[in-house]
Length: 156
Image 1 (spheres, rainbow, N blue to C red):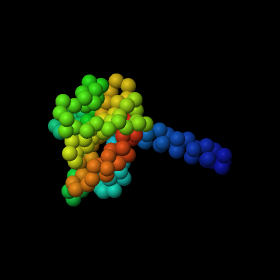
Image 2 (cartoon, helix red, strand yellow):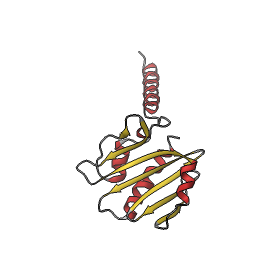
Image 3 (cartoon, rainbow, N blue to C red):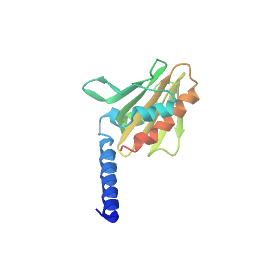
Image 4 (tube, rainbow, N blue to C red):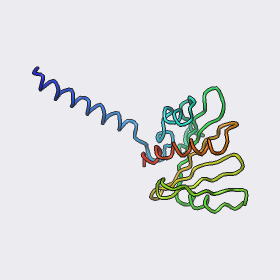
């Protein structure tokens, strides 16, 4: 095989591998565990997480990744615009809503005490990503959620 043919074959092979790999990691609509990988969550947390698990085997709109060795977990909940709008106008005053710019078609943090979730909409869907990290300040949880949201958005 000539070197010209070898390089064409090598480039074509790498292209096929790249396309196949990208497709295998593509998010599946309604399957929350397919939007984030343990590696992405571990990078945002600075701690290793287990593989994502569903609340029940048949309800796949929520996925939870647990920090190895304890310390908390991250959840992703896929929802619709009704949930997004309802969260913007909570029925109790203890909920603090903080608008977030630069994510999807709208986003806000929804905090109660030391728990917070980032709720984002894009088109006619929305999602909530929440980092429940034990003994971490609200700002740390928000930073993790903010880091993960664009990765979820890439799957829509």
